[in-house]
Image (cartoon, rainbow, N blue to C red; front, side, top):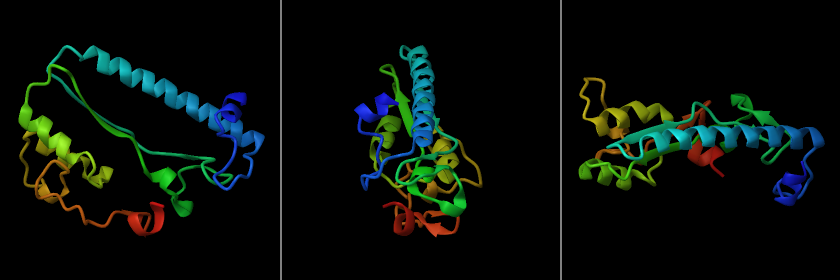
Length: 162
């Protein structure tokens, strides 16, 4: 727990101290993230010399004593910490398709929901289906950046983001 204190992670943004139980759970969570990061980095290393694109998207997020004495991902008490999940695209140095690389670069800062992942995945890989919606693919020029993103009945941008 000293690691958290030394990194100034033992307090909430308002200055209140996190409980000892909360500090232990937060440290356990950080260790789990570090292990996950290690596994993902090892996968990237396996494909570094291949013509490869790797998509990584987490299945969920957790709030772990980020701004209140709470942990988990309970939709009734939703916060941005429960909603914002990692989504990364790794391109090996040998990745050879300039059109795909450009699409990925252009998509970097677009607002995104994991619900739309399948549309982006199909788009970037050139998979066709009657269910594909270009307005839901972050790689499409038709992507709807103004689409309202709803989580548990709440508008993410208006009610949860900040």
